[in-house]
Length: 375
Figure 1 (cartoon, rainbow, N blue to C red):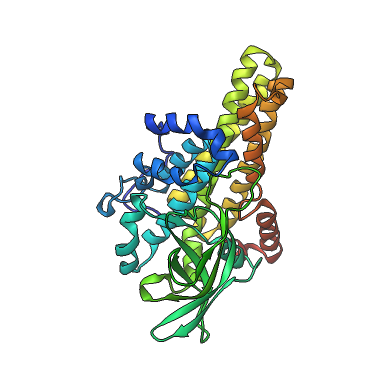
Figure 2: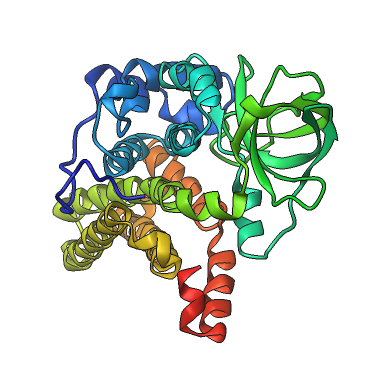
């Protein structure tokens, strides 16, 4: 929903990362991508820099601003490490669910530990976003159990399932004809089982795993929203907007590298790099405006198109970096950063909602007529 406390709809000013975090990311970005040993360190590093408080009202323990500031911060981290930005996105998105929930008990239990990075938040709603578009059925089912419920099912892919402790969100099929709800469940709750980390080709320090629920108890204090069909469209602009921060940061890093290489060698590519930079700046401005003024809540299609556009810009930016590098990009002692960005860029089209899923949804909306574009 739009931030009524702020009146301007212009782009937020880009802010540099704190020096300590910048240095840590630069020192460990390769290891975060290729190994799992530092997975437990990412959340504390981001928390120590105050990043999880960005875009959260000061009255609730945040540093103020709005979701646009969170998008900018995620993009800044993604310029250094998409693994860390992926963790940041999952955690900050869960915080957004808590902020937009009307459940005071949920806020009282989880908000401050999440802001401080003492507990990991896992968005868990990729399945729900696909459900909202009719792509996939819900994977978690609730059965009545006294005054509460028992949750059963599983989610095949969730990021930020930190081994030291996590809380995750899931959309849940409810009993007795009630609409699907959005629930939170803690990693140490009875019946919750986390898989070993998935064997990813990149982003291996992101604590990405599967999770299974077997008769997991849930009560009123665990309810994020009783009607997922109303809640999900309301949080989707923040969910997708902050997810787009990953594309923005990665594209900026590749374009900056390509421009520097062009200055030394292949000047014929300079105009193409600058043209793509202009396209990126335009897409970012439109994203921030739409997230801020609320238009994406009533019209999802323009936001879907922006997500696709930004993913395409990432692919083009990495290709320009490759062309500007030439054969040196294939030498390990010269091309480690490029090789990492190449692997990272392969993730952008498939993170849920994937480009294929978004394109299918846009085709459905186009076939159904103008009314469906507001869903």
